[in-house]
Amino acid sequence: MSWHPGEKNLITDVPGLKVGNAHDAALRSGVTVLLPDNPAIAAVDMRGGAPGTRETDALAPAGIANEIHGLVLSGGSAFGLDAATGVQSHLRERGIGFVVRTAIVPIVPQAILFDLLNGGDKDWGSRPPYQDLARKACETASTSFTLGTVGAGYGATTQSLKGGLGSASLITDQGTSIGALAAVNPAGNVTIGDGANFWAAPFEIGGEFGGHGLPDRIAADALLPRLKGGAQENTTLAIVATDAILSKSQAQRLAIMAHTGMARAIYPVHTPLDGDIVFTLSTGKRALQDPIYDLANLGTLAANTLARAVARAVYEASPMAGPSEQLPTYREKFGAGRGN
Image 1: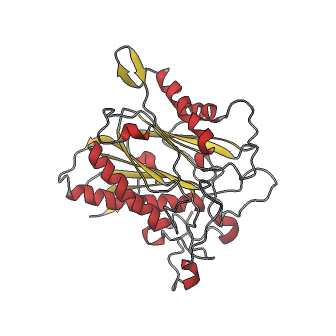
Image 2: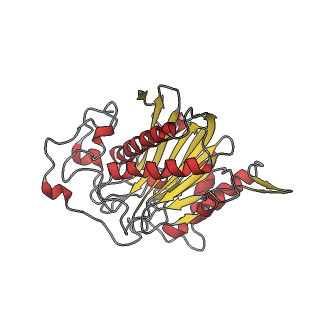
Image 3: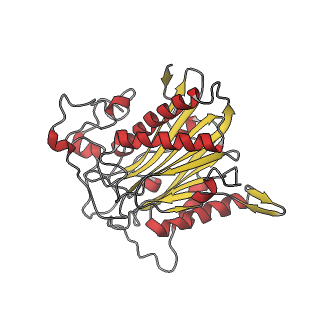
């Protein structure tokens, strides 16, 4: 089996998907929206100890809702859960949703990360701004989008560096497409110790996050857990998409396998301090030849792709607006490396 990144090296290399981002620099927070052109099969797997979600029960294999119409990643902790309402309103106005006789109800699952203590102005008055940010993200959704300090990743941080929004893609030799999108705000780190090397280095393609590779030797102190913040102050949110035709149970297995990508890119991960979550989405265009063997391969490549997306989120980050103290970005601390 062979593979290569898609044309854009973004989750939108999976045909039929668009991504929109909106953020507020003064707020230091934002929203990322993924919109499929058509209703899609989806599933979810949560591994962190402090998740914040909306409508994830609808994705359970036993649930009767067999389609979703959007997915939302947002900052703002529990206040950010209002973002899905903005996406639902946007879709309903366009006649998109789950039809119940004469009613239309868009199914829009969501997950949030904690960015309330990053120095932004969170004094928003009587109503959080996330619903409005989500509508703006929908209106600007496209197959091309910027990585780093944008959308749900705008106010994100790791233990030692600025976090952000990352994405990556793979196309297999059979033509199946896989993409990942991640808002990276973990309690741990994506780089090894105090160096420029990414934990995800073995999965890097073409210097996409600097081309530094692995160090010749990983010092013992690099394996000591380094954690930021406290409970409910962290989380990495991810979406993995494919054009392979999947059932809900197959999509669930893909989400479980894709979580390995976080473990390949973040150290430590899935802690009680994090709310780590992976959504999976199938646009249902390409049949699996072998439902077990091909799904195993797909899950393995999905984990690799998610690891790359996590590293790219940090590699592409830029400083947030405002003069207050901030963690350094990767490029401020280490430079760009040989990638671009």
